[in-house]
Image (cartoon, rainbow, N blue to C red; front, side, top):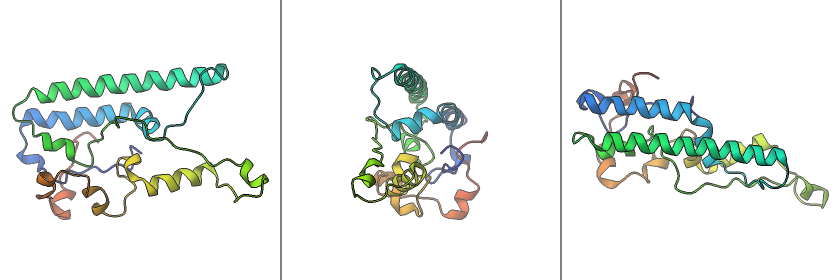
Length: 178
């Protein structure tokens, strides 16, 4: 998910941003990279019963620790940048700036036992994942969309009124590090 993310700014020219503001996208991309698994888990939530067995309890605990670390780090970054008067809040609407969903996005697997009962053949987990990511691209922070129009409908009107053209975007990296 991190490797295939949208990497350019669509609505802000990097050269026109305040130098203090420019450190924020780099810090956030660091956070995204460090916590990519926690982002993915939040958007591909698999229900676990921590009381089922020791392994489930361990997986549940580790996932919870990753999520808590992500939320703490992300909120700390938001508080930091919101102190700067020059920080444009519209920067948070850039498709390459990931957001943590308020609620988890459940991923319900197909049950292979259905086939034995005469139901349709169950797809592999890999195929199920590909299907859910293509059908619901917000789960991958828009990295699986075929066109800008798909995610553009979720951008605030005042922000999406001034998109950069593709040639401007191609030289307008969201992060200098990655």
